[in-house]
Amino acid sequence: MSESAVILAAQRRYFNSGATLPPAARRAALRRLLDAVTEREDEILNALSEDLGKARMEGYLTEVGIVKSELRAMLRHLDRWARPRRVGTPLAHFPSRSVVWPEPYGVVLVQSPWNYPFQLCLAPVAGALAAGNCVMIKPGSAAPATAAVIAELIAAAFPSQYVHVLRPGGDSHEEILAEHYDYILFTGSQRVGSIVMTAAAKHLTPVTLELGGKSPCIVDETADLKLAAKRIAFGKFLNAGQTCVAPDHLLVQRSVKAPLLEELKSAVAELYGPDPLQSPDLPRIVNEHHFKRLLGLLEGQQVVIGGQWDAENRRIAPTVLDNVKEDAAVMGEEIFGPILPVLTFETLDEVVERQHALPKPLALYLFTRSRAAERRIIENVSYGGGCVNDTIVHLANDQLPFGGVGASGMGSYHGKASFDTFTHYKGVLKKSNLLDIPLRYAPYTERAFRLAKKIMR
Image (tube, rainbow, N blue to C red; front, side, top):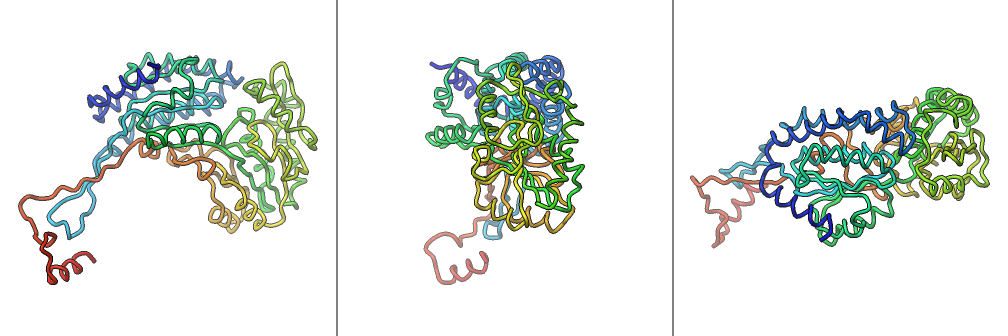
């Protein structure tokens, strides 16, 4: 038998024992995970540096800190979330009461990517544990150092029949997906997301898919250009642009394009110095394949900021492209790197029409001082989530659900949304034995029919 089949069978037995169900057991699991993360912070940050060249500050802000925040939120609110909730009951069912019972799905599979290999792995695991599930984890293989730390951390905190990290180089992706899980959460590309959903459909397994897409960043003529430039540069070039919710491209109102480009040039210099390739705060591209892919996207484009690269260390300077055409190669795929194409528009109507014609993005960002523009975009453009006058920080708010829509994904998690994702809400109506109203029973009479119509209005 494959590793995933063996572990799945053991986890199903453990789940069926009821050991994960009591809120006290769930709190203990969350506390163990929080303690394990805290104890290994240095190891985690070192692994993130080894895999992606992340500075310790960036590693903590975008990975370790977010996971710890999620775990603390789960611990604060778990008892309330897990409590059965009484709801109203129609008069037709008198005398009775109705209750919504939150129950875990069972054994869930969490498949995470390489770009935020710690956060995007353990944040959903926290939600799965809070909901009372057993968890199998498949970390991103392109971040092996982080995957190894996750495996050690989990093995030290949990028995494998409760939480288990699948070995790198073990079961193939096809073997893992062939098993019958009770829920799957996958973060990654649209191509692989389609494969996951197809495999899940064979067992009618529900899924949450966190995918990606070309997330636009809109800057209108009312925006604070200096602040917008700094926040755009932060969100775009964080993790060398290898962020699923990074601004993929800029849509700038033509009247402010020139001054915005000047502010972007200043912002990049402020963040990464006069020679960004020497900055300790600029991560590297994850592997040679993606490095060459990104360089290919630069071919034939007008570079107005950056454009330099270091092949030996797989680094690309923060780069801004001007006069980009919609049919350019760089606009034909999610960039996932430190390259920012700039396109222009005259009116917001153009932006709305453009987005209606494209797949729904995972994120959208709008820089404006106009409340009318803000409302126009939020109400008329569909996207997973985003910010007004900032970029990517919505991801760090556990009060906001994080997820895609359409081609950018389905379902959401973070905070209460994580608990909801890994929970089945079971409706139960409990009827009294003291009284049994005969209205519903045959033989049916005209009088009973008239009475039923009055009761069930």
